[in-house]
Image (cartoon, rainbow, N blue to C red; front, side, top):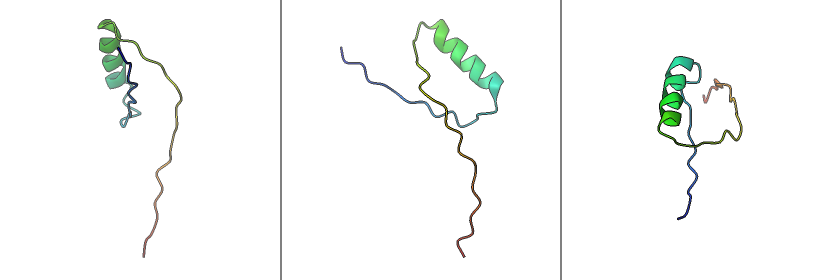
Length: 49
């Protein structure tokens, strides 16, 4: 069986309660995961005029 990695994008980064609940449920199901790296990209406000 081939293992296909899946990347999760956490778009509500400051909602710790939501992610804690999600990962707790994920782990409870017996699923495994790896944290590879965290990247924080600041919002950039640009004028295209």
